[in-house]
Length: 230
Ligand SMILES: *[C@@H]1O[C@H](CO)[C@@H](O)[C@H](O)[C@H]1NC(C)=O
Ligand SMILES: *[C@@H]1O[C@H](CO)[C@@H](O)[C@H](O)[C@H]1NC(C)=O
Ligand SMILES: *[C@@H]1O[C@H](CO)[C@@H](O)[C@H](O)[C@H]1NC(C)=O
Ligand SMILES: *[C@@H]1O[C@H](CO)[C@@H](O)[C@H](O)[C@H]1NC(C)=O
Ligand SMILES: *[C@@H]1O[C@H](CO)[C@@H](O)[C@H](O)[C@H]1NC(C)=O
Ligand SMILES: *[C@@H]1O[C@H](CO)[C@@H](O)[C@H](O)[C@H]1NC(C)=O
Ligand SMILES: *[C@@H]1O[C@H](CO)[C@@H](O)[C@H](O)[C@H]1NC(C)=O
Image 1 (tube, rainbow, N blue to C red):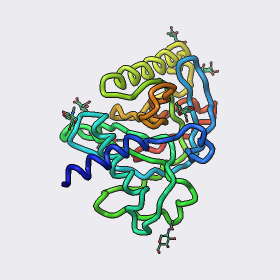
Image 2: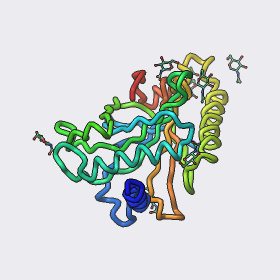
Image 3: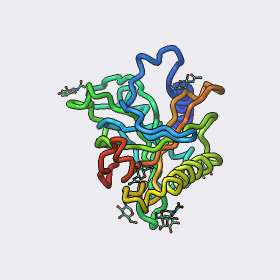
């Protein structure tokens, strides 16, 4: 019986992740400005924003951890909170992959954006969902877009491409030798995959790799990055 229920919930998750096209205006997303654009990446300055996050450990699979974490977040926004409130879905869904300590493998934080209108009194998740509210200070993120489905077998390539683009930018601008602070990116090889579309959309899908800009792009308006933001 338990498995039947899980399977049904799971199917409905697949069908509800995330945004029906045509309703984009009602979907809330974190606010940003683009401060730098290249052909193959851009740098965005995100405003301070909050994310409801589900930590998943003990797997090496991006897909499995995203399903597990999103399942818990899905329950939360469908009323599994102390107010029994339904919370509108937001976009994108993030999966942050952090190599925080080599002892227990990677930490996966699956996140949904928390509208500022809830910030004061965000409905508390039921404790058994084991969710946490993370507040990000305003900071810059280097972004690479990619299409199709984000999967275990293609995200590494996209992350690598973004790292290469950033390195190329760095060396072609000879940033470390002209007195400008070199760009450094997040410690512990952490990065985030952002997914914007419901899995029922087979084409026209948008995903992104996000890597925090720790320093650099200061002339473009990037503030110093605060470490240890989850
Ligand atoms: C992901 O989950 C599936 C189904 O539970 C399992 O068969 C597979 O081994 C998992 N993959 C990884 C890399 O853990
Ligand atoms: C949730 O309930 C608490 C306590 O009743 C209340 O203070 C808070 O405003 C509610 N939050 C929302 C988003 O409804
Ligand atoms: C990086 O990893 C070390 C341990 O390997 C950990 O103590 C530290 O908190 C991590 N830093 C971040 C930003 O995740
Ligand atoms: C995590 O970092 C440690 C220390 O830098 C490294 O040995 C290990 O291979 C990394 N793990 C993964 C999965 O990247
Ligand atoms: C250093 O390089 C950056 C990036 O190209 C450029 O904007 C800046 O003007 C350079 N500074 C000097 C002193 O050449
Ligand atoms: C960077 O600048 C230094 C000093 O101005 C110069 O010697 C070096 O060749 C430059 N490197 C590249 C890759 O342009
Ligand atoms: C996927 O999401 C992006 C960003 O919200 C949107 O521009 C695009 O139209 C969506 N694709 C489909 C097929 O709905």
